[in-house]
Length: 270
Image (cartoon, rainbow, N blue to C red):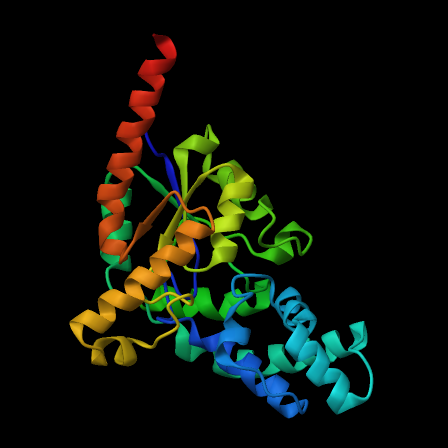
């Protein structure tokens, strides 16, 4: 009994340290609509299908009230789609620039493959967005064995479990307890828990941490440990089974989980 499949998120987990491609665009489209949003507000729904992300932001009490003040009425579904169309256009213009694999990802994926583990992936991006991301990431040396987008599951992205199930089907996973999902947002954790697989939050480079690589490296050692501890706490409060600081820790964690599975199995037979 061992882990057979690891499913990775994309932005903030495998590529795009800090998950800045979508965040910058969310800030811009709301600013252009006359409503200023904070970085924290823009990041909170991160990991969701992007139109759901926009809808969730508009439902936030402060943004909802500010939208009503600026526009003289509550937001409508038409407003959601207008914002999303602007988001999609602007994101597609810049997305290729945010496809660098995060440190340790390529080495870790190779280690897992050498151990016979299949690599799946899920995302909050649409098919069209992922055409850009996968092409440029592959050119830079990162390519999982399988990808599922919300587009492929009827736009039922995170926190729904269907993208994980589609990965399991395609990769031949026998049981949910032999699957690990790794992500950098609370939406990733919820997706994993709803699917009944192991939920792992990766901290450094995550959207939840919310810093660029340059900003993180500029912190003192003490400041880095403080923000690592804060992010770890958020993941644990969301229900994560484990957290790792970087992807370099994942192979050892996989061995730990596999050992735990075997102990649990032995206990079942006693």
